[in-house]
Image (cartoon, rainbow, N blue to C red):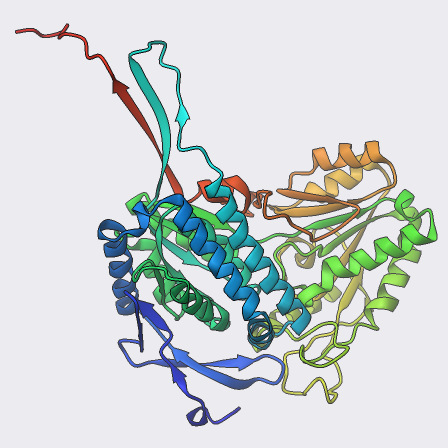
Length: 506
């Protein structure tokens, strides 16, 4: 562990246009998961810091100019932010890699996607009509439905895609005219802190954007229950999301929950009928399961493959998984980084151990790798793991692992494939691989998942809504629905020719 006294403690709480230390003076070391060494020290906020930030956001919404700023000006600011993100792409991509443990290339792609999100919501609001006219059946009545900002938004983001997930909330919140307080994960806060600086540089008025760095059980809990917060948007695990909903219920604030997934990747034999098809399906199964070490809510962690091709498919999958190069994300040639923390690696290890005890067959991985120059022994690395002969009763199949672990199940018929894919409490995403277009449409239509990829896995479009069924949550992000989350609807009914009093003349 590095000597934290050699690191500068940053004032990472931003409220009312001022950077602050925590009221308590508490701090937290931010560790690089590739070697477990501290590379930054940030303020560790609590309920008092949260109250200050919410108060600043409340004043900015009730008294400041932002909610009444013309849409064209709000859109222009979002575009300036996108330009600043492009300008700082290399620095932010490196910081994201160091903070979250991903490769630099993944970090750069994340920053590109963040810029795209800001541009998308800028274009969306700029192109909207001012309101929807409702025909009241009389020329003397003008009736229109308009959209207004919700108010003060509490935004709670996860550790796996720190800046990307923050942008999916911040961009539409600002586009709609809201003010906000954001709480990034306490273990990966650095790029969100940097984004607040870019918003300020772009000219956002003081108090509109606020950030409190600190843990969920203090900062996040206070944000969810705070009476001056009008909306809470949370992305994270099921247990924490349930607590957020419970805390928000007494004040009846709007709640958007983006929770976990246990996502099926269904491979039919006809997708593997040619060598090219087989090779692509295997490659994408690896991508689905092991990108960012499996620390992805939409990871295709359940491979459901037709029995007739199972043996060949799993053998090739395991062979390639063993060749994935683990290491520090800044090293050339590294394809997969570490897990985000020691706690997360221990969680993954416990799932693999339980699976083996329940009868799963280990095809590759299942352990910590040998140290190497690009892979320090102190880092939180874990080998990509393929577990064959799995079934629905296993914890490793039912529960979200958030690590580089792929389970394999088999099916014999289309109906059985659909039944297995839908046999989960979650419903976030899934994939279907087949050469039959009719089957592709049938299966995609029957899957109870918010996103279904056909002959692909993981791409998303800013224009398309993102959300899930079941315990994957209630929120919608991206697309027009993502903007709608941050709005209230008002019906304005105007009588242009008031009639004389008809009732209760007295």
